[in-house]
Length: 158
Image (cartoon, rainbow, N blue to C red; front, side, top):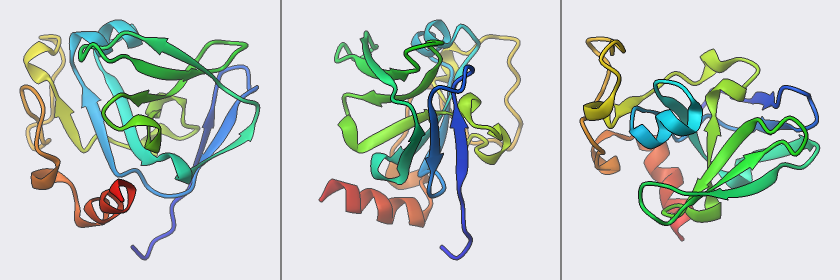
């Protein structure tokens, strides 16, 4: 990759701030009922990135274990003061990958969705753009991720 990418974000009160030091691997717009309940909205927008590429520049989030559809739970990093969710760690990826809450970025436009997932349970009034990649449930990453993300994923798996 030749272009430089950084993005900063944080919680509402400003106690926790972070910097993403590279572009996300892939961005999910998840329409599952779990994400709807967790976010209090019609979907959750999560940018997947290697944990080592996220630098905490102020404060320290608190990891809160919450239930998940898999039954294995997820750890949500929240500001201990204002309780805003900043990222999650899911059981499948463990601590190696952070699922950054795109809405907590200073400029959320930097991480538009690459794919809409679990659209079978999306709210009927949500309109997915006609050319957007979307699936009713989940997908095989080998079929849809860009090459740079596949290379970085291989490095995580070692």
